[in-house]
Image (tube, rainbow, N blue to C red):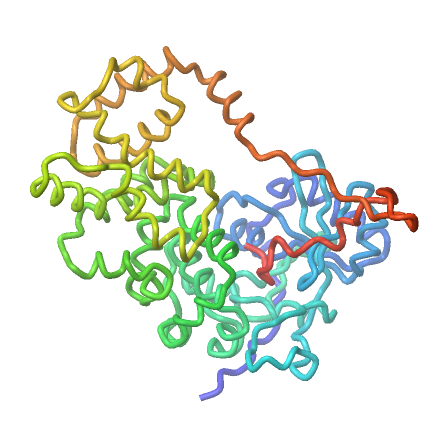
Amino acid sequence: MIRKRPKTIIKERSSHTVSRKDIDENAVNVLYRLTRKGYTAYLVGGGVRDLLLGRKPKDFDVSTDARPRQIQRLFRTAYLIGRRFRLVHVKFGDVVIETSTFRCQPDPAAQEDDGSLYHHSDNTYGTPEEDARRRDFTINALFYDIKTFSVIDHVGGLRDLDRGIVRCIGDPDVRFQEDPVRMLRAVRFAARLGFTIERKTLKSITKYRDHISITPAARLLEEVYRLFPFQSGKRAMKLLHETRLLRAMMPELDTFLKRGNNALFWKCLEALDELGDDAGTPPNPALIFSVLVYPEYKKIIERESAKHGRVDDLQIARDVMAPFVERLKPPRRVFFDTIHMLAGQKRFQSDRRHGSPERFAAHPNFPESLALREVIVMAEGGDLDEIAEWKVLLEKVQPAEKRAERERERRPRRRPRRRKPTRDGKPGGKPHSKNTSSDKREKPSSD
């Protein structure tokens, strides 16, 4: 049965809850600048969705009929990014307003003939309605018109928002083959918003779950991190397990969960969520990985200790993390922080502690190890007074200002851009334009 295309619905200001005062003033400035210059411009995507749900959006995105170069000329601090999906970042200090041009579905005949539906280019411009229909889910395809203060719905997103449903726009079989990461996004939105995934969309996820393996590791890693903000990690991991996406992404973790006796795993995720906030602050990446592998790590430690007595905690941590490194390729710093957080748990036990508590608390990796310890104590129903005492000691030997300064020093420095050689072969000329940089944000729709 073919689902009829929803009729366009326009909700006037009196019948919705979106207000300009709840929109970032920089996004409002972008919208008004574009409209004053004669262009059509809407607030789009997750910002509109969250405002309608009474949530505070983390980002505000704009879509317009102005072309990327035209947008760039209107703003002094505007930068073109992306190849597959060309858009403009308009910067206001630390705030970035992502601004894109209305697009339509690319012509399949114009795509690279590699036997897949994956879009290698997505810069075919179109109308606002076409732009809405090429987005991923109905709840992410709503527009807010700054001129009339109305909400525009071309795809049935308002109805699904009211019903609490995550539904693909168009045929989910086609949409997930075009971009398999959309399956992870469906899980993320359902977990974060407390929604259910529409039946046909869910069936398609289970059907095409193995396609997630064609996703570049860097993009997949970013999507894994995005499952955990907004206290939604446990719900997201349960959905990944139920849809069997977890088996395609992290087969070792899926196998561990299938063996049973995995209550500690879910309690650890619950504790991680509890320690988070509802403002979207993401957990430390190393803390995410350490929580995911800790239950298996603990079982191996206990088994090997019973057999051999003394064990190499650090090597076991390396072995447990190895499959994640192979598939998701986290940065080396994340890997080393994770294994030291895991191996450092033994030092919280008084009978296995080496040296004084002050010396332990002064170690550079101690704050991360303590964060994991707090999750474990909460999951196992331990004494949180122990954590409070360690935090007091941490502040004494590593004040917050000192930790912040060390964190800044650990951040990787940007390499200077290479300059094109002159005709005589000597370095010189203008640096490469930012417009030729690779697409750092490959997903074709807003959060």
